[in-house]
Image (cartoon, rainbow, N blue to C red; front, top):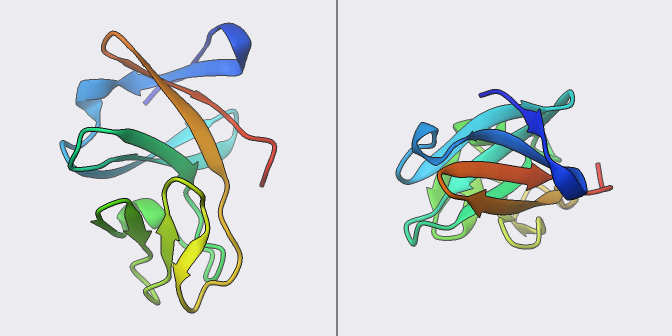
Length: 113
């Protein structure tokens, strides 16, 4: 997935059809690893791709509704808030703003890390 800078801090990350119909894919935005996640209702979310507990890729985890589960120890994160909803993680992950324009996915990175 390639990135192109657009207005207001948004970056074009990929075409919508490059994402799984339901599930997660990893992307790099200005050196920051993120997980782009499409839920069953078609919504696209973007969170940091690194589990705050075990430092592994969340995009390789399982999706359950609006919750992404880490494949290693089962930590769960809410895609809307980044808050952990299942142990062992206790620290949240950053949530980034997603905007769909036509067939393109644009993301504005949050200040959080």
